[in-house]
Length: 284
Image (spheres, helix red, strand yellow):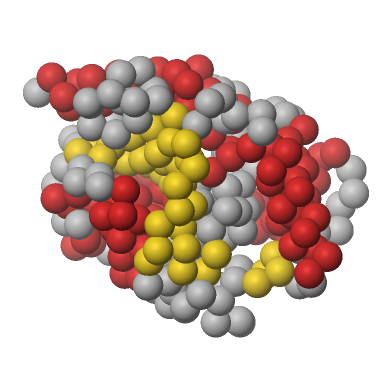
């Protein structure tokens, strides 16, 4: 594997940048910032403002920060919502040094928060971003006001084979259903275009892992887990059993009819769950 993520060709990168810019143009009004870290330059998109603790969004692999378009306006009620493009993925960030493990992933996020002047944040992470958010809650708890894990990759139990088979098939399947392992319902065209263009990028990222009981027990702050009923990745029963053993106070919600990318399949439900959870945390 390459030491840093890279595009397969200059032409592939140029096409990806065009698709990314077209998708970003559909976003509500936002501020673009770039933060230098020891791993490269991280791009963030911020919607909203206010004095309340910010929400930081961590995306799933290949989806980029732009996957949060159905969510950002609703979440930005009296507070900034910051979507980070992961340093280990395609998107607006540019990796320059290896990110070998979870500790480095967490460090890249902490350095990004430092560069933005954000001391504490409510974390919301989907899939790979959920794994990253859990790692941040374990390793830098003083920076985390609350954590919402949406369909976290691995983290609580191994990824189901159905997802891995669907991921492999997406490289060869040409039908509109090539991304059905991610979504229960067809997403907007800009998301499909981004995912298609991401095939021109070869990431150099650590693979998500299942955390030990001791690791999970290190999460001391408020935590909730949200799954999709039709997910190819998560198993609600196994998740519920694991939480009952290690984090029994953690609420688990399964969204009916939603697939792996729950924030796109049912944005209204996800927005409500996130905002209600944060309201309870801040009222405590």
